[in-house]
Amino acid sequence: MITRKSKREVQQMQDAADLLVATHKEIAKRVKPGVTTLELDTFVEKFLEEHGATPEQKGYNGYPYAICASLNDEICHGFPTDRPLEEGDILTVDMVVNLDGGLADSAWTYAVGNVDEKGQKLIDVTKEALYRGIAQAKHGNRLGDIGHAIQSYAEAEGFSVVRDFTGHGIGPTIHEEPHVPHYGLPNKGIRLKEGMVITIEPMINEGDWRSKMDDNGWTARTIDKGRSAQFEHQIVITKDDAIILTDQDK
Ligand code: MF3
Ligand code: CO
Image (tube, rainbow, N blue to C red; front, top):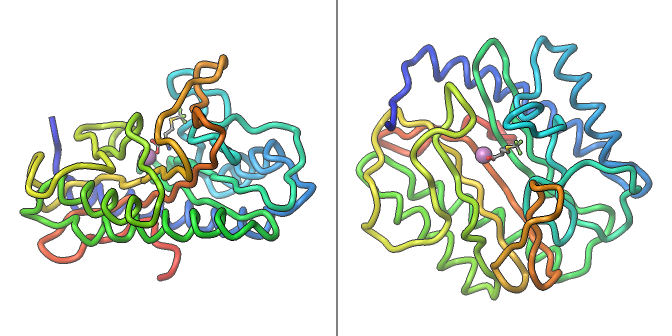
């Protein structure tokens, strides 16, 4: 069932999102060579606790950490580790904040120091792909309009779109209907309606789009060791432009 959220529910998610944005800004300051993703995970858990919130991912279907930290060829659900970050790495940090029952979900890819030209282009194209998807996310449009905007742009730039993971509805749990694919055809799929809250979170690969699962049962990585980037926002559908709850620029 796809639900439309009340004003109060949206406000609770916005409050959680404000804290999530602040957390991402703290992470941005800390991502540099020598830092480990386990240190980032510990930081996030403490920072959220200090602000009266909890990391919703921890314990979700048994996921063991506060953040997903996906490095280079890891597509998503990477486990934080004690390997120090190295100049040239690309790191996606994904997390979900629970503040008084309101959930906020956003992933961001960070460059560690200087990243080579293709890696930087991958990051830039993935972010732009997210915003092109968001531009299609309005009342009366269809899910395929979002996916098509992302796929046509990313593929024209020479990259590929991960199929095995999608965006999703959110609230009161992390993953609600509908699935929001980052590929598709215009004018196909269910119609978006005012009040729906969804995530759009394209994972874009520099090589093959296909993924394989690590032995830990969580981490997905590219089959050809090419790198993968991801940007995710949580948005509210309206009759006009979507409201980006996890906007970092407002
Ligand atoms: N934040 C992820 C998403 O965007 C959810 C990861 S579930 C976890 O869908 F269990 F891996 F944390
Ligand atoms: Co999500």
